Image 1 (cartoon, rainbow, N blue to C red):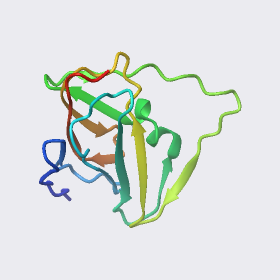
Image 2 (image 1 turned 30 degrees about the vertical axis):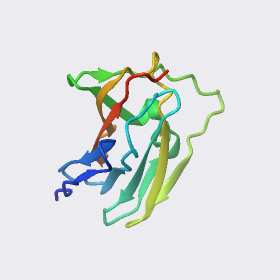
Image 3 (image 1 turned 90 degrees about the vertical axis):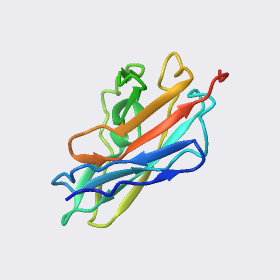
Image 4 (image 1 turned 60 degrees about the vertical axis):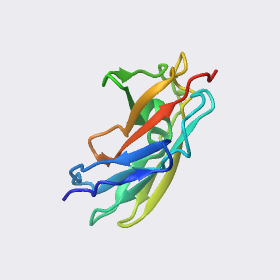
Length: 148
């Protein structure tokens, strides 16, 4: 099953596109297009909705999917992956927060882009949700010159 391609959104800010093969889990990530170019990744956020289009419930990791360091793959205009800062160590008593996403259910996540050090310079970028269990649309976004 293929996901539909999506038309350009907004006025030059971001667009989502894709025709990804749906994984057996049925999990699909759809980005919300930014309202315009991003001034600075020190304060910017990207939001996406994860939907279970599969026939059965899926368990998702809220900590991984809600943190850009773990869930977001960003590439620059040359196709080179942009690395984030390394993740911190969880406390010894850490227990992953999970939830069950029923068929047809959705969960919205907001990712803070302050995880790039130094902040992303002006330019064109693409983002996808990382993972083999999730079919992710590709978001094209722009960081404008002059941001901190």
